[in-house]
Image 1 (cartoon, rainbow, N blue to C red):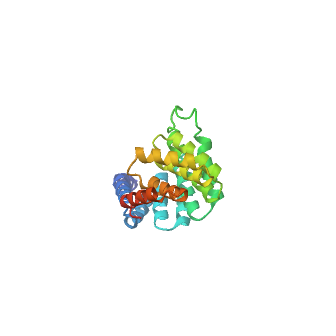
Image 2 (cartoon, rainbow, N blue to C red; image 1 turned 120 degrees about the vertical axis):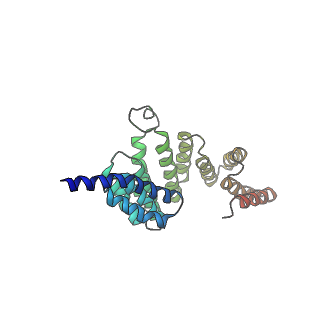
Image 3 (spheres, one colour; image 1 turned 90 degrees about the horizontal axis):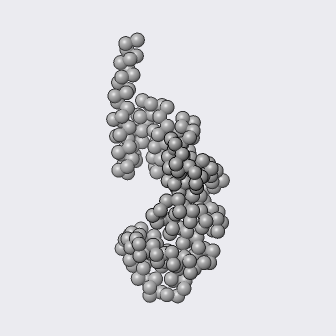
Length: 232
């Protein structure tokens, strides 16, 4: 019996350090190093939902969406109330073009984190953050399927759910461009550039819009600025 207690003590002492090492490697982008570290954490604590979800994120980054989906599904089984595995699994499903499955995961979050009432619910995470991410990803799914009006609405709702969500506002402007509402798209993109002058995506999007309008001189200026901010 004493041997069992000693083993449990060793695990309890080793787990926090192993988790921190794996998380640090993930945050630093050292994903090939992070994967075996998360494997170690899961060996020490096979019922740790966060470890499974984090390993799933690493699996996806390393190009294995199927393994990522399996890990996120296991995380859901261990922590059925958490939105993170659904969000992460949806991202992996998008990578495989499994649009309906991804949409189902995002809508699972939206149903449980409604636009009003949940923010002040005791014992629950504020609704805005998971809701904003789910709406933004849902917009990406709808855009991939060519439903730009629905995508635009989802992006706009994501921006409302998380103030300062510049990427959602930029994506909403792109969706407006896709449905032919060029005036709204240009207005939003210019507003974003004024507020976030280093945001390359908005400048690149405005470049395309201005080029279509025939304002090639200004388009080239914004393209040069965008290229300098983000060499992609």
